[in-house]
Image 1 (cartoon, one colour):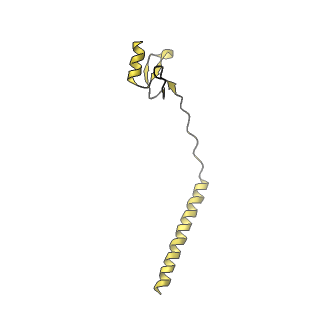
Image 2: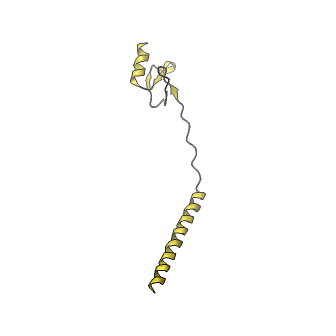
Image 3: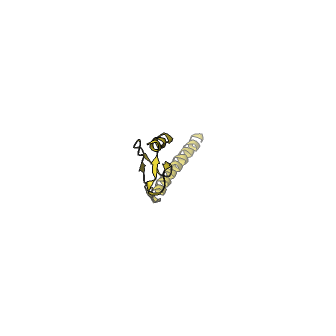
Length: 81
């Protein structure tokens, strides 16, 4: 009697595990893929040549004469020119 009960419990657990795995696969196939991220324009530091994101870069100048720098040392080297 105990062996039959243990086998029944094992069958239930195996069926439940397979069911959950198949449900996850089906759910994964139905989801739409995420769109690719928007490209970010980079600017080049005129001193060391490092490419930086404009929003995170240090700047010097204004308007069309604006320069972007990766660090304070590069900005100071540009100002000292």
